[in-house]
Amino acid sequence: MQFLKPLKSVTSLMMMVTGFLVIVPSLRAQTAVISTDSFNRKIHVAAQANDRRAVGGLAKIATAMVTLDWAEASKVGVNILATVPDYAPRIAGANTLGLQPGDKLTLRDLIYATMMTSDDIAAITLSDFVGRDHLFRLQRAGDPLDEFVRQMNQLAVREGATNTRFTNPHGFENTRTAPYSTAADIARLALYAVSRPAMRFYTNQRSRSITLYRSSGQISLPLNNTNELLGISGIDGVKSASTPRSGGCIVISAERPASVTKQPDGSSLIYRHRIVLVVIGSANPAAEAHALLAQSWNAYDRWLAAGRPITDEKQLLNRF
Image 1 (cartoon, helix red, strand yellow):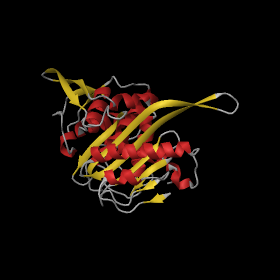
Image 2 (cartoon, one colour):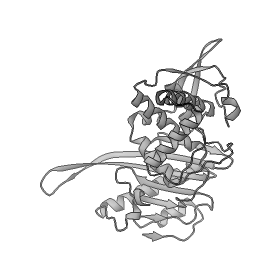
Image 3 (cartoon, rainbow, N blue to C red):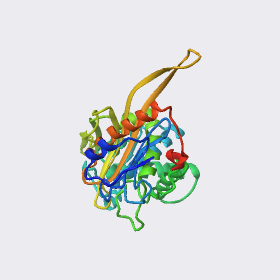
Image 4 (tube, one colour):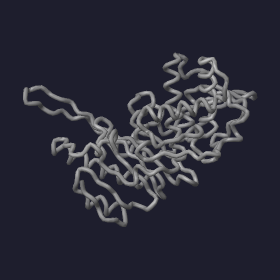
């Protein structure tokens, strides 16, 4: 493991990296980062990755995954219509699409709106619908939003994100108890998300149109993905976000073509290569993430060439 002196820029940082795991003391004082490959969960870059902090709309990764897990487990699917609840505008931080109480959208389109444009009303509508159905199936009374957030936190615990507390489905810091997470925990949730082909389909599109059903008629709404790195350097997701408390945040996932390695017995072994990288609290999250991705691939390649050594289990995300 190599410890680097504080550097003035990501560019100078990249030129000096030589080890298998890079601990970055200072990109900026407030920035937390981590990158790991998704198949070995080996950490390749880390800085303040276990610091609890606001993560803003990155919480919507958990919102989308709870919804997709529910849709699969209930066998209801994502084509069913959900209604924007009356209370949604009162607790939302952002209503990027202008959704109104009483509007109806499919769960599929609500997931698109939640992940591509980070619309808070869409996230609240998902949580109200799924939480209400979950309470009904459990034959319990309760608040559907609270039930959904409980499911978000259960998902976090299941994936090892034990330094995370969600308090709402959209991530905006407007609840009495402030939500928080860490870069490492967001990476754990993102790894679960990218393991699901359905989720990657929601997050890898630059633009899409969704359909809104309002009392005045059917409306087509264009969506543009706020993740400006999509399609660059093999990046196919996952989520960008920003709030006053979290600063600029981004989670990216990038895959390179699989490689084939000949084994001593003459057989071949296929290796897939995917990096998941998290940046929290950055003034320019896309630029930092793109530079750190190149650094991560360099560290990853050196690790592969050395035979994938693990000299310290804390180099693995599961033990970090």
